[in-house]
Image 1 (cartoon, rainbow, N blue to C red):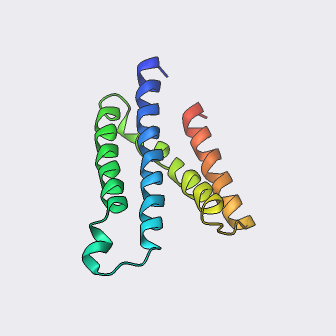
Image 2: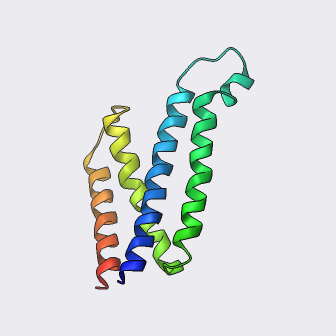
Length: 117
């Protein structure tokens, strides 16, 4: 993998990470009580999360200029790792062996693809 491709792969993975952070922000906003449905959608947390989502779109556009299209879904699969980590650490969701096995398989799949095995 060339350094240019590695740089753009990291750009895409940064976008995936930011997208996971946006999901956490949206979940935190959804856990609050609001006086009206309008406030539910037009509050600073929700607006900021959607701005982050738009930013990740631009990061994807930049990354896909260099990395092969077939690599994108592999790198985007890292979102499952981020979301699970945030779910367990921030929202105190339970981790069981099935989730652990699934995450392990995702990591192995990413490694196999990345190493060209």
